[in-house]
Image (spheres, rainbow, N blue to C red):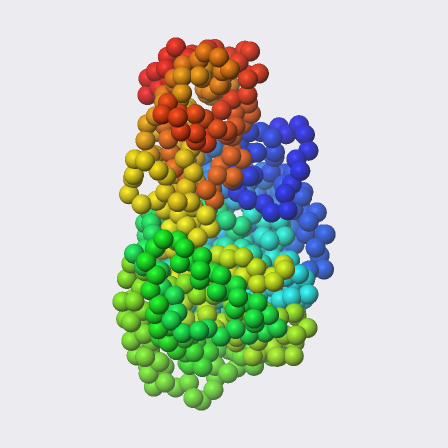
Length: 590
């Protein structure tokens, strides 16, 4: 049990929480109390429709007692659920009170997350019926931007993104038809991961445009987003839109694609966004991968089909009957958009014409993205909520300029932070890849964020963006905590030995583990392993390490200095000196 009050950071991550849980320094009940406190603190930001409450969370906390925290990767991790995704026993409103119903079972993705130990803490606000990219179209209030509340939050998955950014959840579930899982990520400084169509089941999700809908995740880092992906990915036989899409081991693409023509930016910060994009382009070019300038016309023309073409009729097909019978319950802007799907111009012939045109674009995009990742701004600008009110439809359309093409072309995407356009106004880019190439997104995003996927093993130097980590005990190959290394993207690099100035102790802990202590004089050379870990993952990994162990500088036999496991000297007082063995493997026999 925890004995001292923990100082909670503003941003919660799975690595930080999991480290404290496993060390016995924090209990999930304490985390939930802090989340409820924060939700009440930010009540006027209109983040939640069903806010976090102790009575609603308690059953999940009780269920954790039956799960081994070591074996469940999301044990005790709190998450927000966009209120068009079902959570058993909580009303699903889709931000329309008259539409509300109480589901008898969880949506498939929610069920899989709960099975992995995660805790849904509440239902988050959204643009009504997921129709919008701005976050202001809700009878439950306009969601405020997490950093500058006078600005838009982005939508339609507004509440989930702001909840994560404000430290009220580790991750948040959104949905994405035209960019709703990416725009809020960019505007609130988050990672937004949009898997391939069908890779995550959509059973239990109120459809916006059923053939294009995806469930998505917001998180503070790529590692957390990919942990969620591992928990929820997989075919669901009860979901007619589900398909088996494997995400292979992350790697870098053969090419990065940037637009050859200048891009358009909009809103009061257009010039700041342009400069931020130019800096992002320079950072992309500095990654050391081949960069190719390409004509992006096909992507922009495909994007125009979403709302100018017959796919808006699919929205009407799903919600038209409700709208016709409850027009007074639907926001005017939402009703206008949905009703446009009933226009006479949306004929069967126009649908097939659009399908044939889109099929051509899909083929062109697939060829262009062969072993490649396309990079675009996530948004080309932003507004205050007051400014958006002067041009609500045009402003919303602008927000989809670089996002709308994605699902129509059957692409996967990840939105990642890329600096700031102005003070406290985050700027983000989105990486696009083919549906079968999500592993290229993970590799490229990790590289851009500070720790990529290494090239084939080289004996001399670590790959750029990677940290060498020396391990001498339970994190070595074949030992129980090797999985922690793998979970944080690390891979075994080479065997090595320390300089002859260390002693190794068997600590009196459960399970037993070694402690490496440098000596001022004397000592021996101890066998260890060198791994490479993405630099972006090192902080989260360090949070898992219990005292008296920690990370510090370790000198190797050949004179190199690397980051590695070290032990505080006081621990030697009641530990067994096993230096003579030469290494932990000689003690355990593995």
